[in-house]
Image 1 (cartoon, one colour):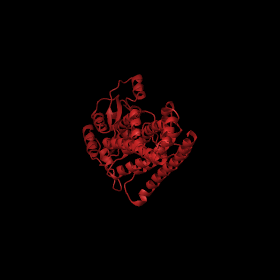
Image 2: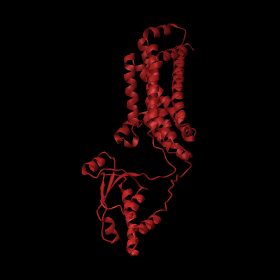
Image 3: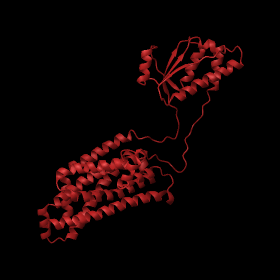
Amino acid sequence: MQVFKVYFKIIKANLIQIMIYIIIFLAISIAYSKTTPTSEKSFSSTKTNVALINLDENTPLIDGFKKYLLKSVNFIPIENTQDKLQDALFYRDVEYIITIPKNFSKDFLQGKPVTVIKTIVPDSTTRMYVDMAINKFFNAAKIYVNNVPGIDEDTLVKEVAKGSSSETQVEIKTFGNVTHNSGYAVGYFNFLTFSLFSVLILGVSSILIVFNNKNLKRRHLCSSMKNRTFDFQLIMANLGFALICYLILAGFGFIMDIKNMLSYNGLLLCINALVFTIAALSISYLVGLLIKNRSAQSSVANVISLGFSFLSGAFVPQELLSAKTLAIASFTPSYWYVKSNNAIGTLSSFSFNNLWPILTYMSIELGFGLAIFSVALVVGKQNRLSNS
């Protein structure tokens, strides 16, 4: 196994450059884990930052209104000047400004038409919750004013508070046997395309540059080792190197999210990554045969790894890519790898009908790998004949 031993001696000499890409990938993965959304089993409302400008007196009605709104908003104290209020909206210190006009409480209790003045950030997504809370309070209060003559403010506020004290429990139900949130795991394995391509191209090309040296090739031709034996050992060494890279990168996924990786979804993600590793190794082997000098290694590795990652949807979700981009990406194994990962992430039932599309995507990845490897064997044979 002379070729096998020499192979890993060369890998050891280029270990620093290879480890850089692995460390970069792991750093990206950690950063990504902090921004990946997770599915929740419960619901909780979001409070909106609100400024309340009271031009009326601090009446029991206004005080009760403030206490009622505290369930839905956070009150932010802001000076009642036009510049301060505009700055607060512009910088999103608040999203909603409520202004209560003079004599509001008196006019409201007398049944006169009154309006709460609202100033809102344009296109605010939370305004409706504040609107609903304001309308709910004053609509309920109006019912008591219209139907209970002479009701005082304290009683009015107490009755409205009683009516609004009941809360509805919201529970999010999922259909099927979904027990894990694999959002981070899917994102991690999608990012794996970048690092795996980079590491394999750098490693394999470093080996082949050495073995494709004319003087070394001629010495090999003079030796007793047959070409078939040499090629077999080289292929096995490449597979061993690729397997080590796969185990390191996939293994770190278990460290980062062991709960979700210890599931059927996690197992499928690992199998899909292993199939993709074969395809990535075939491409790396072909690229390594075509690279003639070390100065081109990093450039080629970056172009292929970044290009494939952006096209396939590893960095940008496939749903956001144009139809033309996806059509081009479909000619790469990375596209089918990411597509398979996304399908695995949403899988809740592991019946054959649900697994069939995923198995199809994996088969396409493997088909790419075998086709590219066949081309690489032809290119390698031509290189041997031209240099002999």
